Image (tube, rainbow, N blue to C red; front, top):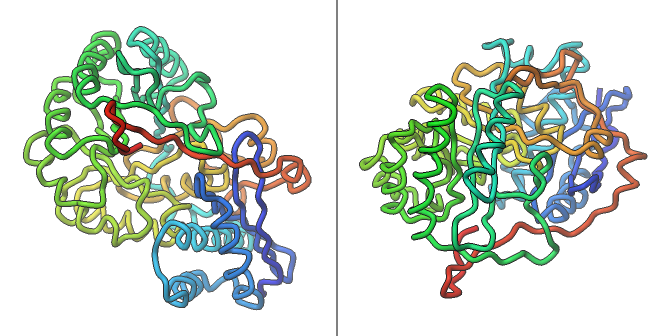
Length: 402
């Protein structure tokens, strides 16, 4: 069996997705997600112009060799564009392997380590009362873990707080929207939010909060300390992760668990944080961290250092990526949580899939491969639409982290 055709499909059923389709000379095909939010066309070009010609004639079962070939052969290694492209190839090859073997991918990864994948939903609102309503909605749907975000009094808008509570897409304009941010207002407000949530929902519901990289290490330490009475499962992305030394300061000053990594692309981006046990959850994901093969390496390293998985799962990951994530989630020994933001009906129609939610858990499909497909004719009806994530400025106009 050889690779005979490689196609890059760009579609926008309510948001942009880049999908790689690898077809063999025996007609078996596999899918991989290559979506990079706000930079989708860069990955599409990388795949179409540079990667696809290298794959024709290769043996699709040589997954590891192909991964190394694309990583080492490019000379310019790492980075989100390169690693998203490699991820798409790797994921598509695992899909083909599962179909040829007649097995769901998780069985090729060693079989189940758990009965289901615990997911968390996004409860957000402009006010505390609004967010309590949203938390209750997720609890009623059976969720065991909920991320809590609210608007900040005195600020016109806050990233992570949406108008549509079911389908949230933060990439809202071709040119990034600019929001105004105040760290002082935020730090004064957040602890009171979680006091209300705990009072309303008790001690056992897993609560999470995303800081979105907006604090300095000492500010993050202060926030973590103030949240300790409310026993968060994690405080996500407390600081920009380029300077990883800062996590030591946070660690020394709070016992609130830390999650980070959705913008990481390789094991070398998070090796220090994992090895020094400066974090508790690693949030790398299939599409942005080199595919199933490389993400498994990251999770294996994490397992040696008491760090659990907490993979990113926002709407900028297509159902192809979510399917791949679930196969890995159900197989690894150190699974923690899986983010789950539901896609719109249009997206689900373009990407029919067999994974499903029930009672707080997602289940991967039991069909061979990943258990997800793409309707290319329907995908063609949704052309690419430029969209970017917003940016933040401090009240004095200084450009700040998003």
